[in-house]
Image 1: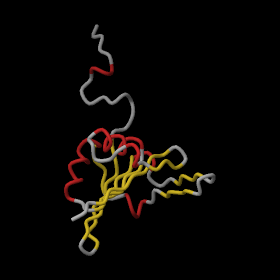
Image 2: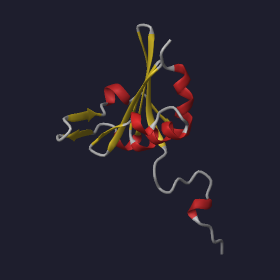
Image 3: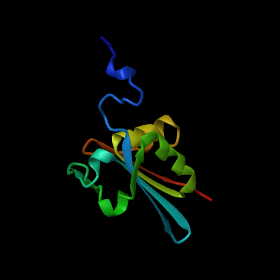
Image 4: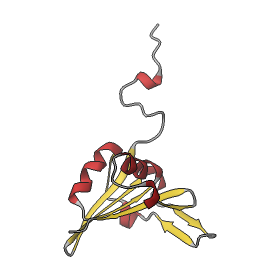
Length: 118
């Protein structure tokens, strides 16, 4: 009998999704990249105490679905980057694109924006 633990299976991510929604749009002279974790698309998060609200709207974030790790390669194509969700914001911090102090937390959901100066 084969005794194989799930974490030994190639591609297994602990049962958590590793997909994100990605949308890349050219607006005038800028290229805007919007990425959100797959599981929060279409949801709204509000922190009434802080007066903050974010709507993870399909019209803004839903372009195509891709692997979290692969989405990082799109950062170089964009001049403005908008990220929302634990997985994508965490990956951006881990890769050194943003600092934890640059994250806005809204109802427990991290949000970050990057703007490249030319």
